[in-house]
Length: 156
Image (cartoon, rainbow, N blue to C red; front, side, top):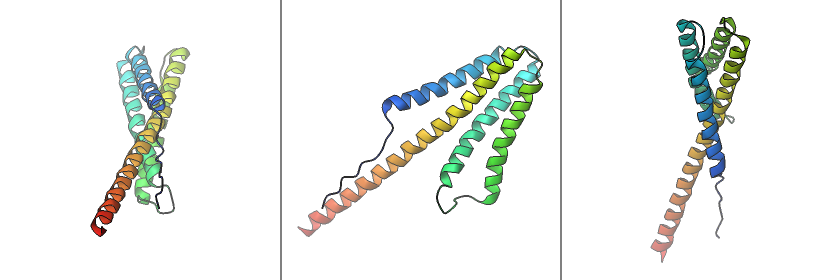
């Protein structure tokens, strides 16, 4: 009895869209921060805040995906670190943006770029994880096919 197993994969167009969106978000943030008026210390703080948000968003996406289902994969302390780090990164970056003495139009630009960056990070992390899981499933299925073919050949 032959079963047809299909592995769900994202389309090439979707993968390009996700990578292009992420690249645009990074570029818009970099451009906004590079030409940000004001103090150099404020600019440095915002760069660190954006990088902190970026890394904690990837960590949070991985954490949530790893802990799907009935059996958690991580410890409660790691849950606190991941969620606390993301909340702290978002809060500190928001606070830094709010307290900066720049025109409201600059604040609005940086806020929209920052939120665009965070949303694209979660989308990119999901797409990469889906691709990894599909690759693993495909490798397992290929191994089963080879094992079944080896068993059939040995019994003949």
